[in-house]
Length: 89
Picture 1 (tube, rainbow, N blue to C red):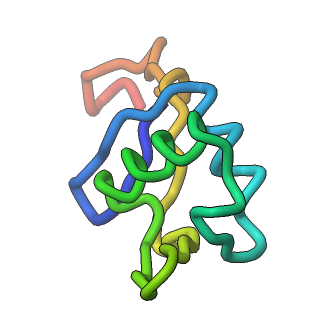
Picture 2: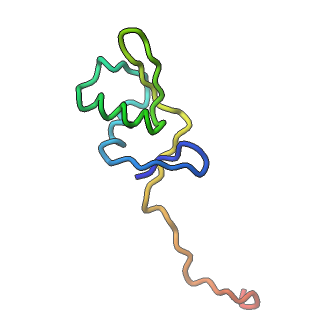
């Protein structure tokens, strides 16, 4: 899937990343509250500007970037049965 972080700017995320994003949409969290695998995942997503981070002396606080939109890959519509002749309309 893709996540739009700005107009005309999309980044790719996996399905596991989308589940992680959905699990942490409502409130911020700290890096010491996560497992080692989730800490690596949130660091990578913060590099992609999906999460924003605030560095403190002892830990890092993460929150979801509220500007992003998840774009599903199979949402493209195909226009069929349309004539190109203007008089046929």
